[in-house]
Length: 148
Image (cartoon, rainbow, N blue to C red):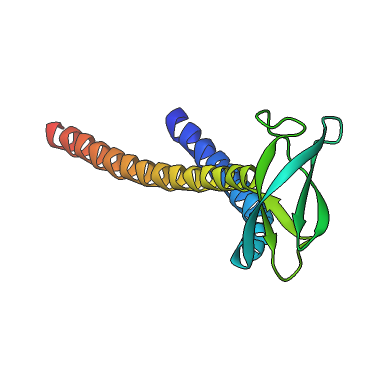
């Protein structure tokens, strides 16, 4: 009984975490996917890292125009003045994202998928245990009836 209750809570927790991660990071990442479909990579320079706001300002040059993009992302590997790959939308060069930011979003989207898979596996385990548990209980009842 207690094990079934624990499995039930593990299923619910895994589903909630999985759906939260896949939906939030999937929707946020989809905007980058739309940019990526019409993108070209250029090198950008890290101009400012604001730890209080959690933002990084990247500048890049396209067609002799300098663009600045402030992304809500901080990578401990990036320092002010470093070069990084920026993917900008050729239809609107002011829309862009950095490679490191996209990989982190993809990672957490994958984590959400893994949690959903874990919850599905736990559902199968729970149903398998319930089937085997009821078969064992029926066998015990039948043995007791035969003995009497």
